[in-house]
Length: 449
Image 1 (cartoon, rainbow, N blue to C red):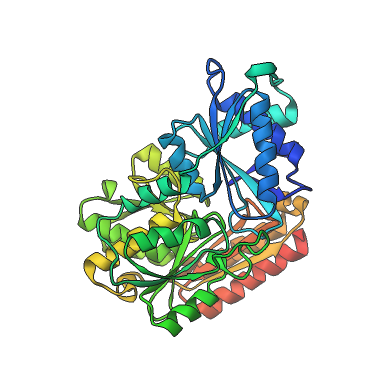
Image 2: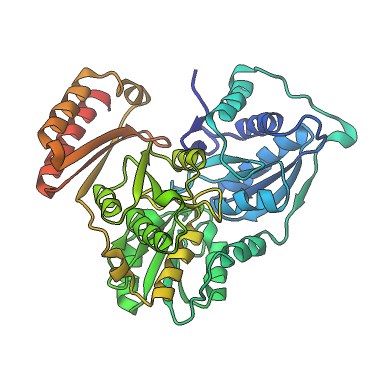
């Protein structure tokens, strides 16, 4: 039996894989699972990104919610972390984001937050799947005045921007920055946020048209931002993805500053101010080896989880840590947010630069990045499943891991959102790890594509 939820909600090609009918069903099931049965009209927030299909799926999901008596509050185009924050501020029972994050416009997705602003744990996702796929429960459909209503939150953007502003103790006057909004959700919020914080903002890719989201821009396409920062002599460039829950940066020289570097900068600053809980940072198995070395050199403990910001967050909550994230730019400041927030991350990073009167290149020099190669191999759905049992794939990974020894490491894993196997090899010698990655990728392609 196929399942609905991947590592970051439900995702697929809109209108073929992720249909209106499915959105209605998930809406009904989510209302049943996430709300108190004594609450006759639970309140559910819905936000969306800028892709063409978001209106369609938003309305379908809202219809599903209303059909079981839930009241819907539409937030409009807004970042994913804004939905997570506003669930608490507006005292809602749940929140929903219609977005496929960094994926192309033809994809879309559904991310669901519980009433405390956190993404759903596996157990609740499985309950929703059981209702939709296995018909484990039949939604009760009220009639007359008991069906749900739909309203709009007029101040959602303002309330979210004010929240992020109040996490920054230092204004950003005098700073010149470029903001790549990926033609996505940040197009509604970023210029306002950073202008009000005092920065001079140069806006890039902030004119969404429904199909240009993530198209040659944003955190998965940094080349335009790099060129722009260098050409215009700016202090930094920040790039967000389609739903603005991740952020990557460019220093004043045009050098790429990924999530590992940003985590190192912020962790060192938090530790120096006594703000890093248990002197610990939570990352993933994809976190660069250089970050682990940085932690050892700076008296910081590093915990690694499975790939996915949800697993980072689970570890943080379990052990009462307050900072963690991923190389991809999903960074969680648990003192301020319940999920990764690209604009909050950018604000914290710029605030450190401003307070220390330091260039981003100088701050990033505290960590040395080990060479890392990533090859994405397109595989069939069956190939994705057989990855775990294919003897030839297992053999080549074991052989190459043994050859690398302590000079490097290998991580091969299925993507949670795309038909890909990701082959990552990291080590001291770039030539060696390139050869290893290509060898493994060739076997994966031969056996599983």
